[in-house]
Length: 363
Ligand code: SAM
Image (cartoon, rainbow, N blue to C red):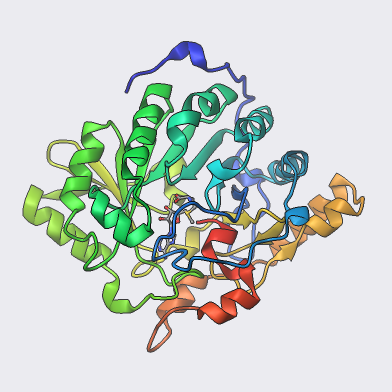
């Protein structure tokens, strides 16, 4: 990966907090990882996430300012959060995102600052984001075939995604990951091609099982390609595949990682067939300040109200601490037990409650 070392401002961080200091929930899971959705808008219409043309958007006045996001992040990091990921919607649609990145990067308790993006606008913004202190980028790349992206995400801008990936490499992020949601009959014949592409771009691909989350209104079990099936397909092509046993930071990561005989690594996020609720340390804040303790949670906790009505940081911290300590969520595991499993929500119910959308709560 080409590293332009002159671009980044050095960030001096204190020794990282011990995980044992973090607030823990009823299953002893720490409050350690925060996903911040900075907008509910997106410039793609992927069939597994936002298949409709029009949506009920969050009111503009409800969207948290950068100052509010930064303040909330500081309260969360005071309770143990060390990893922050910007997401959406499409985070790069949020105007002036590097300014927000710079604010969060100044928080010495954040030791991992990352972003998930569809890459369309990354070509123009990668260098500024890196210079502002963004450490890692994950780009969603479901297919290498432009015509498939057109059919599946209603976008003819596949070349822009590739340009975004190239710009991320040039900018010298710590690690570049590529996310591919694998769907039977759409891209399940591209597993090896995506591995080869990632290898050629010094990136690591993560194959994601198609989840029945909010926006996946056309989900059905037969479209899910399981981790087992993906490994079988890849073993036929590459021979023996060795699991990589997680160490340190990786032991709560959603992806299981694997290594091919030639050393190439990849990951699989098996949220459908092998959910990892028992180790889930993630929570999510929507662009309007609603806090979700689980991707499958039916409702979230309003943090914008208290934030805008003058509560102190200590009061916010006490609300967050108490809520996390009572957390029992195991959404993906509970879905495993559902007979006749189908889409989680119908589009009319999502229109009535847009916070249930995947693009609102962030992936
Ligand atoms: N717009 C950005 C992007 O495309 O990466 C960030 C938001 S997107 C909601 C975050 C991640 O969620 C993406 O990697 C996307 O592939 C994943 N995702 C969305 N819907 C999904 C589904 N039904 N099953 C599995 N992953 C999904």
